Structure formats: structure tokens, C-alpha cells
Image (tube, rainbow, N blue to C red; front, side, top):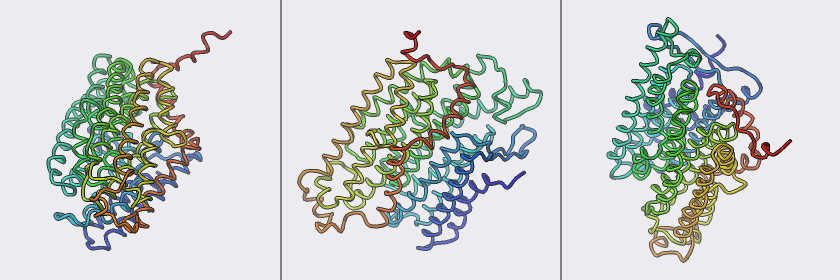
Length: 509
């Protein structure tokens, strides 16, 4: 076995979390950031080597009785994309959260930084593992640091929000566990020996009825995690009561495990069941798209508004997955990557606003751009990315999802475009209400007129790289698309659905 690069990548932030539990005070912050930065460097190196043709795979027997393996890789474009999302986002969340957790009256900042690193570590393992049982354990383990990030830091009702998050997560995990046990029985019967390796299970010829039940078990857990309507109610509460950094990680990384799992496990393990369930799932995705956008317009709390926009965006991702075209699924995978950064800018800049003003209510702001023009400008950039403005990376992925879906279901694709109009409404109306117009007395009282309440150097450094990524891949998305497309083609071959004919091809000679 070659050097375990993937194991090192996953263990490094967990090691940082362990170190931080022994280090208190101001020293904990730079130490935590250095561990996340080192993980970022290693993750980027692995991605570059993968793009150059290097194969990464690690496999060792784990629990022979169950047929479980410690299996990481082989990497494909989808897992590399999700890994990159995780390692890039984490250090900038830590940088943005440098001061926002100091005022907490329960736990110190070193605990927050340690929990963030632990969540990063577990998420990396989730995206890299190719053993179903190992995936399930890491999938459930991510609930632990996120629960404490919500319950230990945030606002008055954080305990309620954390408990609701945990109960929803455990409910999904319990249903998935039944399906995981079912896979053990099926593999033992079909292969003559138990196996949880994804490659072994994907080759099984499952009975359609059984496969559909197992599919439902996995999909239910992933739909709760994503979240999709009607399983979404925990997300707005968690976003409202959590810290901006915690909410960013929850929506940007943790919730992507749900849509990643739909591709990696639902489609690859249960191709017939995926085709069978796709009409219902597409309808749920469409409801999520429109409902999330409409609900965002009516929100009074800025963090709940951002949460509802994410519900709409996750609907687009699920639509792209279950449209079963290479364009839509490539767009959905790229959407997972882009959404993390556009939402991170919104959550983190909104957090800077809230920290200065002391309120999350949209009505508590007004005229902010006159006293904090950089803050207002960055919020606008994040909002424009969220509404998929051409020239930003989110436009590429959203356009691919709609165009790819149109090839198979034009009516659904047409209805989904309503959300693009609604997105412009909820973003621009929010910007107008908070940033433009005369400076309100409350804003004048809490924001210094001389501009000193504008973003400082550390806060700009936390946001600027995220915007650079958004703009860079908006203008030149080819490097990411080249990584994603081969993995999508392999997945579609496993599902067994041919690409739809181009509309003009019917009339050609």
C-alpha cells in the first residue's frame, strides 16, 4: 500500500481538534487556523495530482465478519469536488469567526475551533469513503460536532434548534441503518460472503421490490440532510439560532452530504429504484425550488432568509441529479460546489452586520452602505451570486441544471425558472431594505459615521478568496467541469439511462 494520503487528509484536522482541546486562550485560534490551512494545502495538492492522472485509493480489512473495509477511494471527480469544497471553506470560516465566538458565555473559542476542525475531518471521510458501513458511521458522526456548534454557540433558542437538528438527523440515520443492515443480508445471499464495498454492492442484481425499499431507506436520510421539502423545517431554525460560521458549515458542507449521497449511493447502488422514484423526487425538488424562494421573500430574519434560499437551491441540485442527463448532473455537482461559497459570503457578511448592529431583523437596518460601503458591496456580491447572475459560478451550474433537465422534462425545467425571478426579488429587496436609503437612527448609533465600523482587514481576507473563486469559475469553469464530467458519465452508465436526443436532431436528416 502506498503512502496513505487520503487518511492523512482526513486525520489532520481531527489532530488539530485534539490539540485545541489542550490549548486555551488566544493561542488556540492561530493553531486551529494553521491546521485548517495545512489541510487546505494537502487537499489542493491531492486534487492537482488527481487531475494529472494519479490514482488515490486505500483499502484495508476492517470488520471481516460484516464484510466491512477501511476503504477510501478510488477518487473520482465527484468526491474530489466535495473534498475541495470542504478544505477550502473551513479556514475562511475560522477566519471570519475569529471574534464572533468570544462573547459566548458558555464555551471558549478554542472549543468552537476544535469542533469546526472535527466536523471538517468527519466530512472529508464521508466524501472519500467507498465502504457503505464506514460511510454510515461517519455520516452519523458528523451530527456530534454540529450539534455542539449549534447548542454551545448562538442565540437564546440555540438549545431548541440543536435538539431539533439532532432529532431529524437521528431519524434519518435510523432509517438508513435498516437499509444498511439489509445490504449486509443481500450481499451475503448473493455473493456468498458479506461485503459493504461499494464496488461489490453496485454489481449485485437486486430484486426490484427489495431494491426499492432499500433505496427509500437511503433516500429518506439524504432528503432530511439536504434538506428537501417537507423535511426542511429544522434548517431555518438552526440557521437563525446558530452562529454565522456554524450556519455556513451546516449549509455549505454538512447538507451537501445529502445530495452527494443521492449520487454516490442511491443512483449507483439502486439504479432501477432511482428511475422508479424519479418522478416523485422531481416533483419534490420542484416544490423545494419554488417554495424555498417564496418563503425567503417573506422572512423578517436575515439568517432565516438565507436558509430558505438554500432550500430552493438544494431543489435545483436534486432536480439536476434525477433528470438523469450528463449536463444536469454535472451542473448539480458543480452547483454543490458553487452554492457553498455564495451562501458562505451571505452568511458571513450578514454575521458581520449582525455583530455590529446587535440584531438579525431586516427592519433593524437601513442605509448601511453609507457607513459601511465595503460590507454592503460584499453582501451585494454574495447576493448576486446567489441569484445566479451571469459571470458568476452559480450561473453556470444553475444554467446547466435547467438546460440538462429541459432535454428530458421541459415543463419542469420551465417551472423551475420561476425561482430565478423570485431570487432576484428576495436578494434585491433585502439589499434595498438593509443597505440603501437614509441611515436609520439605530444604524447611525451602532455604525460609526467615519467608516470605522466597516470591515477590517481580517474580515476582508475571510471573504475575498470566496468571491475570487465565485468569479474565477464563473468566467472559466472548465477545470472543475473537466474533473466532474467523467465521474458523472460513469454514474449515468450505472443508472442505465441513455442521454436524451437533442431537440433539433428529430428534424435533421
